[in-house]
Length: 124
Image (cartoon, rainbow, N blue to C red):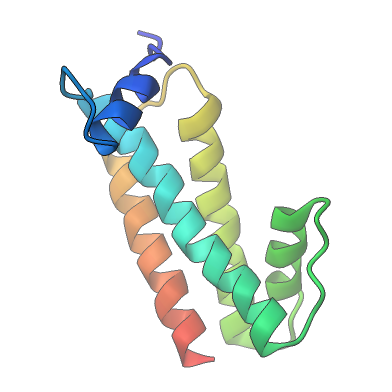
């Protein structure tokens, strides 16, 4: 069955404390995948910007950050880039696909990957 995209509004209202009904589990899981990606991505972007003094372009920012890490000669940075790439694929599935098979499993994997990326960024 296709996702009812208006459920994101229900979730947004719940998060803002203005909900009259509770958001569905599917909308929460999809949002969790997205938030996990952005938690890791923004920290990676900020690492390049603040730690490596790189100017981050506004165009194709996500691909730029992922590529910078993936193309690094350092194994840890390459791992961060690969994990960010996987997270982005997961996020795109949750944000754009009408149906996402095995959504709870995908959510668990995304949360684990995001935590791994953040931990690896702290090790740099």
